[in-house]
Length: 274
Image (cartoon, rainbow, N blue to C red; front, side, top):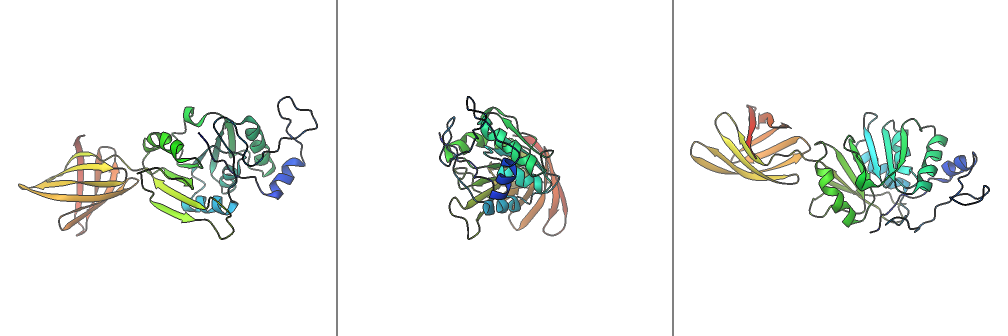
């Protein structure tokens, strides 16, 4: 397996970090420094560059706020985590290479965001990041697919953004290209973790029987002896259903959902079986 890693921080950050000291590689002399190289391998990983312009656009894409808790899976030298912290978010990087972790911590200190940008040496597949509101990654498709069940079990509304590689048949909610100066790996994909709505939902005078494929919903509505096909879509906890000539818009909260019809009537439903 191969993991694609983040690029180096800009020259200004690197210069600031190196002016305060250097990291000795395990077993190296005190005067040697650790400098990562493009294409270097590690535990099932290869580290390759990405552009700061795409990092910025990825964070714009998820509408990052100071209230967010971001986790970067395979954080490399920490560029994305540090950029998120500079925007006010609480950001955490999970990286297997201990030299990269040390490098990232030094960069965060140099940028004055060490209180909001933290890094840990860990295996992303063994780590708990369930409290994140934003997950970022730059991994090959097979690794994305291994992570996908864990991502789908996160709190509905969690935003996931990937550099270059998709999630198989889980179609992205949005995609974009990096700025003109992006030299490679310039596409970002965003998903919003959907609420789980598959099952039978009871309304006052009708019933929805829904199936779900990621953010897409289909099924039937049964009312007064007639059955009407239903199609719909989820945007995190927000749901829009179309049944016959009526559209239902609402919010999902666990085993309940409620909202309004296109005509302005209030509706609510309770999950009675999965």
